[in-house]
Length: 264
Image 1: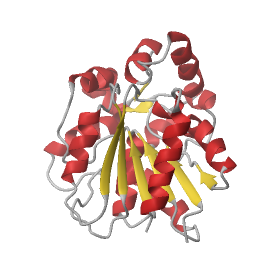
Image 2: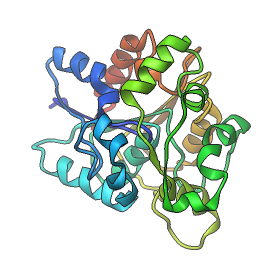
Image 3: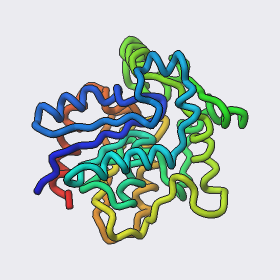
């Protein structure tokens, strides 16, 4: 049986609201679509901006466990599509045996990927400029958001999306992802790159993405040595907030077709 459920995993600095167009698009095709929030993020964007305490309390293991409980309760394995940090979480979920197929869009890297383009350094500098941010939530100003998320959008478009989607990010999680490659043992974003039982995985990149440039996904994909499907696609002219950029419908359809074709 082909999967009839799609699970959408959001990234940092946004909530499931960032998937609103994709939810409606896939539901119109007859799919059940689930876009869970991270634990504690169940309130609206405006409430998280007013009181970001739940963001600071979140951890990667809690997030993964939350999604595993949701997916594990489904009757059949779903297609999992994650964006940004959600792309890294999608990789972890697949490695743990969840999902019929996965799509990692503009994905943050899993442990062991050491490529750090300059545009990524600039995009994450609001968090990484101070170790003190490991114990804080860090919002992005509009100018920082426009560079990191919507650099191919008009200023008017970028500002509207910043106002509708943007929340602070957990500085501790972001610092942890940077330090993961320099600490002994498996860290929160570790996956087994030799796992032959992992479901098929597609990496999707936007050529103009500043915060997670294509070089990161290319390196991440090359780390996989398992005997299962791992592929990569790049879309010309797209920024990090690819799910909201004009033309997203074609990408949504193409990644869904890929997932249905390769679903186990």
